[in-house]
Image (tube, rainbow, N blue to C red; front, side, top):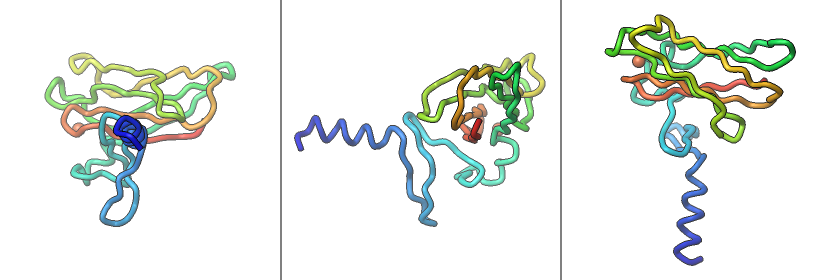
Length: 138
Ligand SMILES: [Fe+2]
């Protein structure tokens, strides 16, 4: 294997992968960074309830729609949810909603997903406590 092939393979394997923890369980990791989950809160253990996005499946005239809510305070620019991001089953970007910390009182967003079916991943980004992942099947 030449150097170029090795670099391509190494990059591909780390785009979506897992990190083994001390307990031997895999922690999800995606390209560009590490995402915390309910089961893997990492350095933010105890912050799960206020950061893991809750996903509710809605239907609008037969089309898939989800509502995402993070049970987190919106304390102006001091501490708030920056955005919700929706990814498809291959971790490709579908949509996002940016919050305005000076106006939005509750971090709730809705996403119309049309005829999409399958796994949906949702990220919730806190300005202090990083990015949290949840998922559901629609
Ligand atoms: Fe936070």
